[in-house]
Length: 429
Image 1 (cartoon, rainbow, N blue to C red):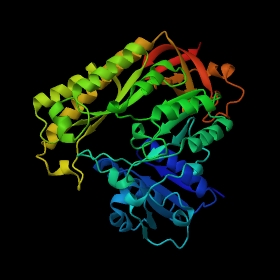
Image 2: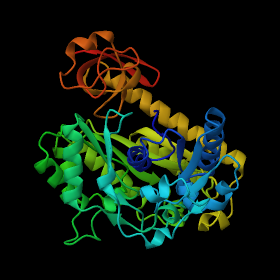
Image 3: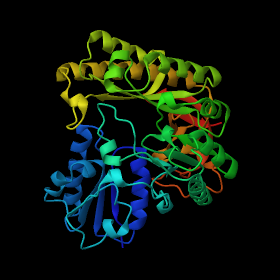
Image 4: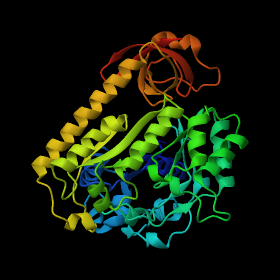
């Protein structure tokens, strides 16, 4: 029987938790789980679309909605005729809540009362070449634009021993790359005995799982990169040369109104130091266009941040007010202007990315093979792999799919020979 279908929207933490839910519901072919996102109004809209599409495809299946959007506004999803039940973030990894056939229509508990995570439930990551491992959840900060703390609760960390054991298990299953995930990853540890830091956790992982070839860190708050983490990121070859930073804006007044904890100069300085110590490091960043009160000069400072921080993986979000956040009550920028500014930011990010990709032609990259004959290099550049890669696959790699001979999960030494838009073209090195 076909297993439960899990539809994932949003962040890498959602990806990790979706795999846990897939394992919990693997024998339930009559079930579709939609793991929602609430980071923007658009994300909520896409969640509703996914629910309707799932019901059209599988009208006889029960549709369970969970995730941040479900946690924050459960009644609106419960009112959808396609939805069988709504389960909050605090309960979605409990099989008694997630897959019970007599589940009540809405089961959403107080997320602020949750004090721990459930890393031991991680499963096979069947659709991914890399494994996503949750080490932290929740957030203690209250950025004025962000609704996510109300969907995820307060910050809480997974003890290092449990993290290491989970990583050992996925490495034993043949995964060469692990991504550490969390809502506020760099805040890992203060709630645990001895208050370990993210750097200390990373050191222990590398020491106790020497078979792990690639470790990748998900989004970090740049102000929390301490000296110990800096040394690891710039000096440890098993940590991938790619950091995604939560920058959000490049103007000090906007950052202050966002209630961010860094200033523009802090972001520029940490990137300069990182790139000086490890020049191949690729920088990604989240940036919001058209935050309330943003004028032309403020926007110009944010636009310039693309070049000043050498952002080659730009995630640009047009600001949209989220009910219940302080920013929604601030003077709003005209939506037309917000859209225009988002477009200018994307153009600048694409230009910077294009220059970076062109500079990679002629280099040799270690590429993790994924679906459709593509994969990501250590710097997270997307690479299209040639058919001759099959002769260079690792014996331990898992079986190929989609007609491509190289196997998903293999790491290929790849010479970059050209670019095609946002994609590098590679051949065996």
